[in-house]
Image 1 (cartoon, rainbow, N blue to C red):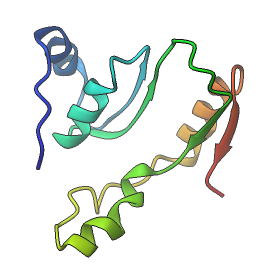
Image 2 (image 1 turned 180 degrees about the vertical axis):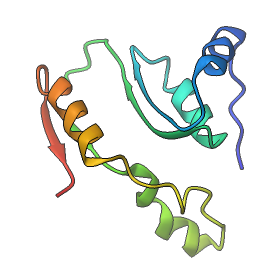
Image 3 (image 1 turned 135 degrees about the horizontal axis):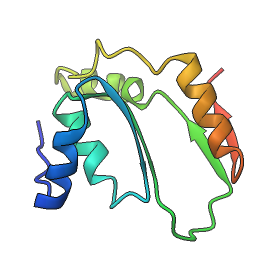
Image 4 (image 1 turned 90 degrees about the vertical axis):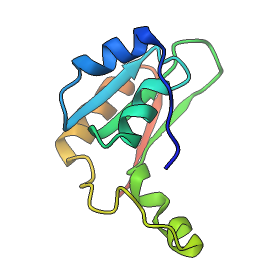
Length: 109
């Protein structure tokens, strides 16, 4: 599996995050922190949001770890997050509530 080498600053932050957490990285630095921690198997979920003006008007909250299963299977590669449970309905609801102040939010039905 690919590995993301975090800068010392981001590694310090990563080391403070408890195993099994759901991380919201607001003002993310190219999503390096949540991506690295997901790859390390430390997080149960992550949301990365950049604060710069990019013209985004909508946000889709999806269980991304399930979206890639078919691609991995087609390549004959074991999917490392197969047994990772999706975010709880309550976590998605709270996240959508927070984001809906600035965006139109779509969630999986």
